[in-house]
Amino acid sequence: MQNTLVTYFGFGVGAFNVLILYPQILSPQYYGLVTFLLSAGTLLWPFLGIGLNNSIIRFYSSYKKQDEQNQLLSMGLFYPLAAALILGGLTAIFKNQFLLLITEDWIKPYFWLIFLIAFAVAYFELFFAWSKLKLKSVFGNFMKEVFHRVLISVLLYMVYIELLNVNQFLYALTTVYLLRTLLIKFYAFHLLPPKIDLRLPKNYKKIFTYSALMLLAGFVATALLDLDKVMIEHFMPIEQVSIYGIGVYMASVIAVPSRAMHQITLPLTAKYLNENQNGKLKSLYAKSSINLLVISGFIFLLILVNASEIYRLLPPVYTLAFEILCMLSSIKLLNNLLGISNSIILNSRFYKLLLITGLFVILLAIGLNIYLIPRFGLIGAAVASLIVFLMYDLAKIFMVYKFHRLHPLSRKTFYVIVFIFILLFCSRFFALPFNPFINLIIQSISLAIVYFIGILFLKPSEELSLFLKEIIYKLKHFQNKKSS
Image (cartoon, rainbow, N blue to C red; front, top):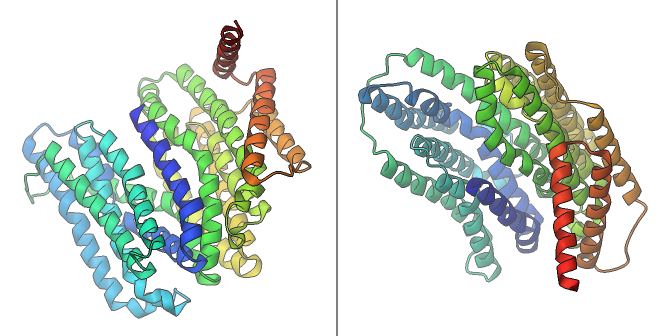
């Protein structure tokens, strides 16, 4: 519960930065540069972390001797550093070739910030995993979701009052990521002090194999989220990255319920698979899919119904075509529809097939972006992302059905999807004449009433129906108590 609250709070601070502070304080060009640096750093960090953040969690508890545990943790400490030195050396040697990928000359002096951000994130993930070995995750989750976003808010305010210029802000932003890593390191070492042992564990080959697979998994996950923003910089003016990035962040709000639910369902999925409880797994699969669809469907509608009002609150330059925002939001809605598909595949012996599929869709994404962005701009980037995610998500559903004979879909799924898009279609014919804040409030309340009345009528799941009826009962009880 604490982790869920921290995640939501962090997302709120992030939304305040992305939608309010960045657009009002930085120019579109520099906002685009920030988005590009963070996205490029996110793409690079799995190659510096080389999957060892996952490996220490996977193998630490399997060792009974402290010497072997120390050897594993020592690998986690020094091998990413070795990877960073090798990649850093190669980057220095081939720097001019890498700089050819950056089209605008004024951006090139900030090239090394990408590497520093990637280095900071790689070691942050390692030390976060280190702290989880002692079953402590709240502080690490706070550092991951909240800490850096709050400091970025402070830095943006310092730019606003002219204590920092934009150039200094970019270096301070990178310092925040390094500071976050340093603090989580102190915390992890407090929980589990390191004892350096540079000998390799006996099963080091198995660790290297697993780490390589996790590196690929991490790269696939980050590339699917950030590749389009990096490639937009290559083909279009840098300010287009900030415009597209705001749309991506707005759409990413739809994924928050999924992230919160997976913290609960991941261990249950592993348990049911290990114990061959197919009946319970099937039930969990279906419930996770329909419940996430209903909840995320409401957020999906909130964003798209209120999109014009949200953009009225931003400088006009950041306005994104409704069609693009709709495609980006549909990607997140589809991902929620999958329920626990990811957890089922990653906890089964077929997870390598998902990684191979992921690499294929990354190559497809690169090809589609190269073809579509120069021809159609931001719409091309959105179309490429929609095609890639649609294929990847359908592949996941197919894998689960192929190997476990399970799928999350039902007639109620179809009814809810149709209901969501009917409401979206109807909303396009209504426009209120008030200021954006009043319009947002009226439209959101009206949408909530219509949407959840419709959900009560459709009865997609017993849990949601009981939950909504309980809320209605409490509201009626409160009203009766107030009137008496």
